[in-house]
Length: 215
Length: 254
Image (cartoon, rainbow over all chains, first blue to last red; front, side):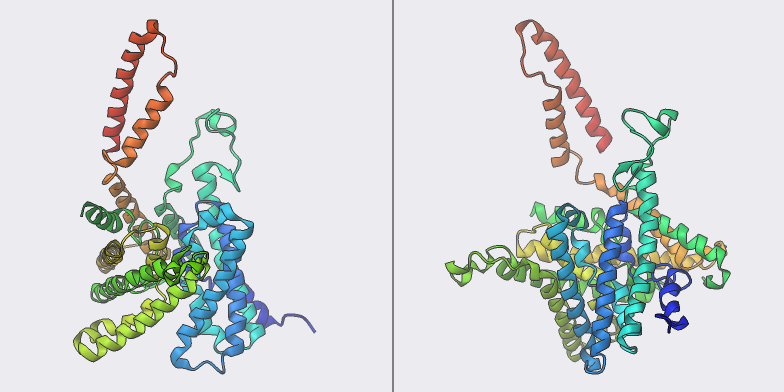
């Protein structure tokens, strides 16, 4: 017996492309944009969300039959908040510099719409194993967009990847900079993230016309 | 008084919730198709921020900060509960939203009809929790300033959603490339608006603290430490030049 049936595999692969949480479901935009000026921060954010969503989906799915529907939002918020506190404390203990960069955006995972959205749409109606896969799949889809945006913003904006210079030294004018290339400071400022995501959406929908919206 | 005015304009324009820190983007994108609904949600956000930010300020000041529990007695001075702030803030927000919903429904049915459906949405709006977390991170000093911060960041968010809703109503008549329609073009317009709002960044720095700091730095770097009598005249001239440079630098900043 295969570990994952075809249906289960779809739970992971669908959010990567045609049902992407950011570009199609429009969930979790807030944190996706603010911290993508560097690739490293994007990656850490994606991993944190994966932990919170995977674990949270399992917890909610296990409790789905005993949560009264009237107070489910508060129960969900408490579960997420607990998981996020764990992430925050771990980051502060092992990656203090990075936790300063991410600042309040770790806390904002709590109100990341992806998490509440998946709890409501999936974990409340499905078993723990499938919910876990759904959580991993959706956070992978979220992470992919974060990493793409972070890659382009850091490469074009600072000429580095993970902090290592790729194009040479902009001050000493070595490497690519000796030909007159300049870093694009525009990519560092926050609004550039929106435009990069807009372009990703454009590319994705050009490739798959079924996703095009009616205005 | 001055710091109130400064904080007010800073939170609306420079640190705009949507354009500078991308908070509340989910509802910003989802509820901005019509101006009327956008106004409703925006008003609800202002209202809830105005209530929750001061509440959380009190919690932070008297419960969470390092040594905040000292009012209970000197033996509590060593407690630092700030790791609990996420869970307490979100619990306060969820409770306040429910309370506000009940109170508004009871006393003002007409307001409830216009705001009511948005209130549950707001509990999970990042702008609300973000307001409290930024209030904590920026160490806002007094309760009055915290209230000011809540209201003014709410107004900033309101302006943003109002603007994008108005643009989206009009853009229906334009010929947008098919794959960009809807979400894509909204992202790009928001990006362009964000670049516009960046220009407000100079509003408070002209002649303000930043410029003075820059002056000091420039002077420190360029001023030679040991001045021999022979060189003194030259140095004075050089300093004049530096001052001129600094002035022109400030002008550019403005």
